Length: 114
Length: 111
Image (tube, rainbow over all chains, first blue to last red; front, side, top):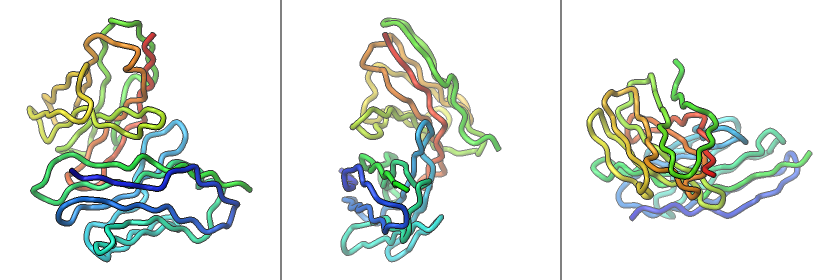
């Protein structure tokens, strides 16, 4: 079946540091790939997405590129802020004609210190 | 648009009690789903629906029932609550296979 593996946290950074959260996946065909963010006490919300190989999703300074050859979708940000502290989830939905079951990673907690 | 709404926000039950968690969306999404989130376990899919009248089981369906009589509503029923069902429950909806829109969650404690 499909799977998503993301680095375990917590990731602890100082403000303005560079962020990378690794995400790799296993799936047939061309799934859609997502990064969601969850702030304390809230539901998940979409951060960015990519639906085909070599697409780059971006939002709020975060970026991730859909790499089919390495089955990866790593999240990056050049300069993190304290307000970026949250839990980040990598996820996929199967290609058309596949199942209707999304697959989520376990989540990576990011803590940014002033 | 209100997006995805869930009620109640908090609930405390005694073992053996039953209850229904409500979920509604106003985006005309055909796909709706229920997850539970537990520390260290990530999100686990309980049940999902691809349209009115169609439901299916996810990863952890035991102890939960769902129905989908309208596009907008997807209630989750706990038949006989157990302490193992203490969790945070999230409802989500989407135009499959697009991004999922999550509700704010229901925090359930079973004593």
